[in-house]
Length: 219
Ligand code: SAH
Image 1 (cartoon, helix red, strand yellow):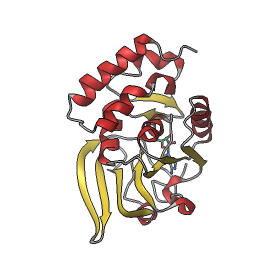
Image 2 (cartoon, helix red, strand yellow; image 1 turned 135 degrees about the vertical axis):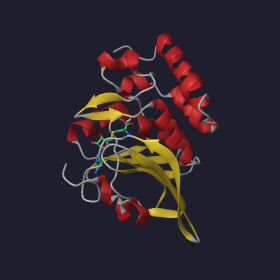
Image 3 (tube, helix red, strand yellow; image 1 turned 90 degrees about the vertical axis):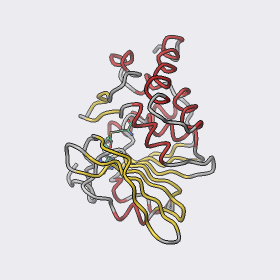
């Protein structure tokens, strides 16, 4: 397989400049991670040339890798520090987890579809992302044994915020999650302090369905 060639580095640099910096993402750690992670290696070979384009792409199982800007926006909203432990629901291609792993101390990522879980695990091993821990299960239940987390990111659209996940968010913790109907959602940011849980909206978005017990149900 062709690895990280000059061509892809050029496309990646243009992506960061034209899609991410141009739209107001300023967190230096986020920008550095997006410049570094070879996004084209997280999609199928047939789609590699589109990997840095301004839209989501199919990753099989009717799922998608998010648009680069959305990945940057959600990552910036988590305000990550280098000793943070992050929980991700919806491993998918593994790209978002790789971005998080460049910034945080450890990433715990859960995927409910077996093929996607296996593919992502293989990529993390191959690319030596040694601080990413994967799990094949219903992420709406969170990861109780490893909680509380400094940050939680849900990369599939939920009908409401799963209370299980809020319960696993530590003091000072931040969470981002798309909440809405099956077609459009609001990207919600939550944080916990001594006063309780606070919620703000980062704007509209469109994600695939969060399935499972505290999602839309089913699988
Ligand atoms: N973060 C991913 C985006 C994946 S799309 C990336 O960077 O590529 C959303 C993913 O959420 C899909 O892979 C889907 O299978 C997964 N998903 C949906 N419901 C889930 C659940 N309850 N638990 C874990 N994963 C779930």
